[in-house]
Every structure is written in structure tokens, then in C-alpha cells.
Length: 202
Image (cartoon, helix red, strand yellow):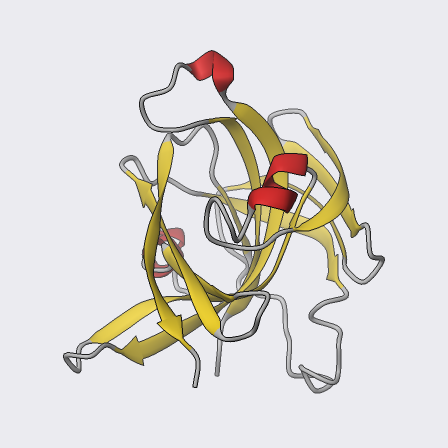
């Protein structure tokens, strides 16, 4: 059994650490990710995520991702409506290959059939996925990036509908192998991103 998902991220005032807030940029982003375990050179088990696909509406993220900072991004159009309790999200990549849609509202509980017993258990699992790797354009390396959050806090999001044609690709995911489990929401979270050591693919 494996756990995969989509991290939908609205970034606001993103800038170098000591730069003033007004120089920061904002963007909508989506990252399809799969939880992974591996052993480092010391034989220690590590946890993180493999990110096969990133999409963004930011010109800077699209052209600088993979060069000025880790992680290449595909250009995409986003439509996001929210009112504090309800969310209506849609994304379509400019190359026409990826589409994500969802609608939902804040909830106090996970679905009854979730593999996680509580919001706290799910939160702990995903907090361990703060280290992410993705294949570079040349296909020879893995770019690494680490997310640092001091005040990690999540809420359950009850989805009325959710769709990603990435996970409907039966060439990668055989029919019936992907089942929706739950959604979580994080709001107004201060965070920092750091480059992580990469890997050479052999």
C-alpha cells in the first residue's frame, strides 16, 4: 500500500529570507506527490516525498524552478474561490496534460473510512513529508527541497468532489489502484524553503 496526493499551495510574499515583504511574490501551485522511504549512506531510514509533477501560475516559478531554486514547474491556469469555509478549486496545465478540480468545506473529522484514525495521526504523517525530491529535466539527478514550518496546524476538509487526471493515468496507476482517502487544509502558515542535497540517478 502507498500514499499519494496533491499539495495545493498558495504562496504569498515569497522572497529571500532577509528581504522586505513588499518585494515578495505570490502564486498558486500544485504538486503531485508520493510518500517514500529510503536509506541514506549511513543506513538510516529517511522519510519524504517524490514529486513527479509541479504546476504553477507564476512566471518566475516556471522559468526559475530547477535553476535558481530546486524543482521544475509547468505553467498552468488556476481558478480558486474560497469564503473561509468553502473552497472551489480548478487547475489546468498550459500543456493540456494535467487537470485538477475539487470542491469542499471545512470539517471537524476525517471520513469514516480513512486509513488514518484521527486528524492528529494524518497530520503527523504528512508533517514527516517535508523533504521532497523531483527528477531534473536532464533525467540524471533528483533535486531536493525542504519545507520548514514552526506552527504546523491542519484542519480536515470534507470534499464534495475531487478529480486529478494525473492519478487517472492507467499506464502509471492500474484501474482501481487509486482511492481517495481525505483532504487536509493549512491556512496562514509562516514557512521557509531550503535546498536539500540532491541525488545522482544511476
